[in-house]
Image 1 (spheres, one colour):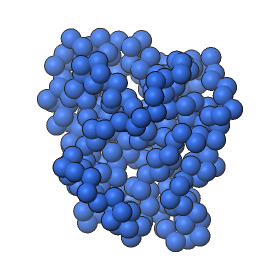
Image 2: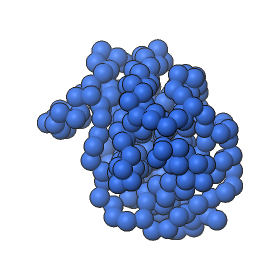
Image 3: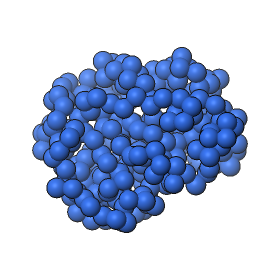
Length: 256
């Protein structure tokens, strides 16, 4: 069943544009504007959700690479966490979905932490640029933190662009209980959501190596789940993800 909502086509409710995609000088400028977030930002973990209100329906799709189309998630054991790895273009909706999902997991009594790409880069990626090698190193650090949380029974909800397939393959191989969630959104809609104007700056050549414009994004071939956020509200996307977690048996394993 497809969620054919015209209002969701523009995606005005998704406003998260990942600074991770931008050049370091631009990121520094936005960092200055966002200073004083509190102690949580020091380790790149976010605790606060986005107040969009309650969900508006399941919005579940069974086609394409949706429910259960990929391999079963292995390595989930009682007392251990898992990692939900949200990947997609800047502005696709990763951070919005990750925040809402983390809140819902906690409401169910599950230990969960949101690891956001921007916060991780600020806290753990000092000195890293945006070359392929530096981006991979940033992912290695994200994987390390996610794995450490998993070992202590915490579910890691990771929202990072992670544009290259080899990055996501590394995360999958390193993290037992890894699930890749592709937050799929057309480039033109991601650009329309960009309130900071980063895409426009990239098109003018002011930001080099910007994912989707001057640097490639390699879309996942067989993710555990695909969320098409141009066709869904944030709540519908989270509901679809939640339904997948329930129907795949993952929630049952995590609640033991």
